[in-house]
Image (cartoon, rainbow, N blue to C red):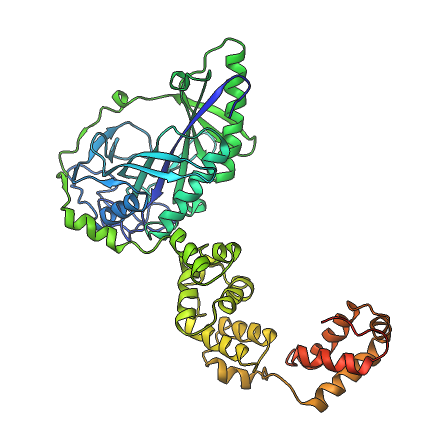
Length: 480
């Protein structure tokens, strides 16, 4: 990609909050929200004399994140103190990892071919949340201080906003499927910092790096990159020099503004944290984390296409969230045909339950499999299936077989009842009858809908269609 006569270089730093119950070095709950400063203790507030203790589950999830990204987990690593003072960092330093991170060297594929490298993954604690909406003073909420983060530092291999967004989509998918984070950007569980520079072709390494922070969506990443390309190109085209700095992205103005000059490693005065021992990981422990990883979304998609004969669209819908794929696999195990299960999940279930909430919803796979068995057996139609699902989501505890009878959803096939409903529909919609007789098959839909309304949606649509065509007669029968 070129920006005028300049060639861009992009590198991404991604902070992911690990899905632990407690913080990285204390037992305070690592939960989003809550009254300010109610999930704190002497450790995460940095009181004198306290000692941090590493959360083992954070180490487990950090290792699994690295393995899911194709990285090498290091046999030995250590924690360091990164010294800088901001009001939201109560100790005056952050516990992070500097020259010996938890993992190194990974790569993610890009849709257009090739791959983007990952330099390192390290663990660190989060800072608190500064609030600057009170006029001439600010407040700090320390609930978030000390929550465990995995920082994933990408290599500067990206050249376009499209590459950057594609990289982030693959990274997010792998982390969610590894079970290490929900990557919810609205809650700050995945945050992206962009490093971008421009240089002449063949001289990419000579560009001045600018960091952009506060990007709260992948769309914002793309827009911010385009803005920085234009801003930096305008400076370089007039003979100016781009300042090495950290800039803040403003969603409202769709622009960046300067925050501070760019710090280097020396500015942080890193040194090993004297209160935390070195991390020494046995090879067997690392392999145990690898073995605990579930099959990735890409592996599931390939299986759904190649073994079950589903199309690419169905395969992608089913792997949109692990909970969807897990429910689909449970339906298959219960004997539901693959296409029927895929259609029900895509059209009925996900229309009612957000994918992220499916696993915790009352719509368990056993209930859904039993309801789909009634549909496959012709005992109810798709309207009945929807009613069964709605009943379950509304709190009904009975089995689908019982609800079918209680709600009157059993398919009606009595010829006399259906014939009477057809006659009523034809009398109510004479223009539709005339249109059908004239060969306009779309008009049959209005009559069919009227009959379904008359029968409470419990009629067999195929039987109703046949009866309507038989009774209307005349003209060309509409194609089925």
